[in-house]
Image (cartoon, rainbow, N blue to C red; front, side, top):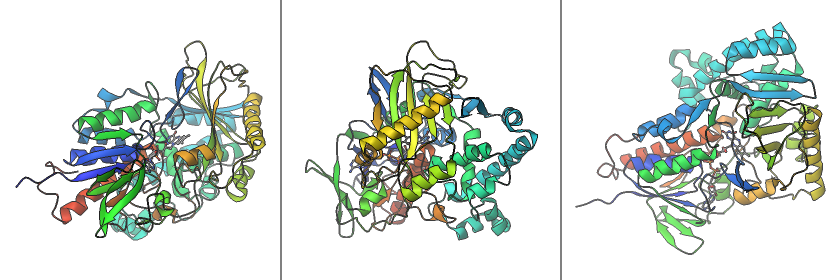
Length: 510
Ligand SMILES: Cc1cc2nc3c(=O)[nH]c(=O)nc-3n(C[C@H](O)[C@H](O)[C@H](O)COP(=O)(O)OP(=O)(O)OC[C@H]3O[C@@H](n4cnc5c(N)ncnc54)[C@H](O)[C@@H]3O)c2cc1C
């Protein structure tokens, strides 16, 4: 008797969805990715302005080992499919017109820059901070990043004889901002290192100190992707297709169907039914809870609150003027950081003066750029209220004026645009990623135990799984990819335990 391959539908072609598709196809399953947008990538996306493609989503690529592992496991080489170069200068930070600080991948180079900027004591604090952040990373890598459902107990068990002492290294028992004050006195450095909480869409004043790990992740390697970040999405699709995955874009999944208590497939907006033994949902789990995938699966997951941050972005082509020496990644800090986060999380309004991130996409890390107009993404944090509150044109304009004036004061001047920028608000993000209000990172990581409350790969419905940045282990491109791997591992384990898998998968499993 010939057994048929397990049929998998992956709903959504974001990073987590594509990685889960790759891992499952590699196990011999028959995988179809159904993506509602015209192109795959999800938040990793490009927009077209003035005849040029501009990255309008992620721009900072870290943790390349996650992608190496995906390519290696598929018997391929990441370097053959993508050209990555490690950045020396991580980012340039500015406060007003004269105060600037560069951070480097090299600790000594950053410590020297900090000593010049804020004195030797702060540079010493920085060195201690680097060792501390690395300790967190070493502590979370196994028990947290690779675990299906991390808990305090499982983390303690993973530390063996170190037990509670090991868990304390994760530093989840105090707030990120408080922990930073152990290392830095200069308010600008507190602001700079506090900003890493926003990489997970969280407030530095409410996130657990464990998120200081992000500073280590960035120092450990920021990569410039030749051709832009969207090349990562394209490379994932190429790898998936080489493994036999079918990718169908422009297919809105209207309903996740069940039969006899387990998942049976999905129904498309066109009415077509696609039958499946396994469905992986790469959409935000909040969409399931809110009924966007039909009533059968509404209670299959629970999502924690509050939502993470959304963003306002401007993508445009321009020839910058002024005295500010642009590099690839630039940050212009607001004058009152605490107020900015009260506005974002308590008042849920656009900040009166937002901190601004600028990605100069044609520059390398040292600031070298080809001549002529350049491509830019400008981003400020915004509340994730895109489903409840439509910011008035005047509010958007006020935010834009504040953001561009802040850059202006720091010496970065954008002259009149010949082609208007594409402005993306939380409303557009909500439209692209339903039930999120525009939140870009799933639930915020606020509170000491928040990392343990994220949705995990498994749902309450047999055969229905989650992959993506809103699920464990968290948001960001590499974390969404890790979630895709964890999801595939859960599918494999569950199918193997019900004995359906053994005769159909390739040897080696995951
Ligand atoms: C502006 C911006 C800047 C960012 N900067 C960085 C950065 O510098 N570095 C970094 O690491 N991360 C960054 N991130 C975060 C990172 O992009 C995300 O965490 C990651 O890409 C999320 O991947 P995902 O797997 O959750 O899928 P998503 O990107 O959320 O994609 C989900 C997909 O599912 C599809 N879908 C949803 N519902 C349906 C349905 N019913 N039918 C069919 N398809 C459906 C959607 O269309 C979408 O394509 C940024 C994000 C944004 C928006």
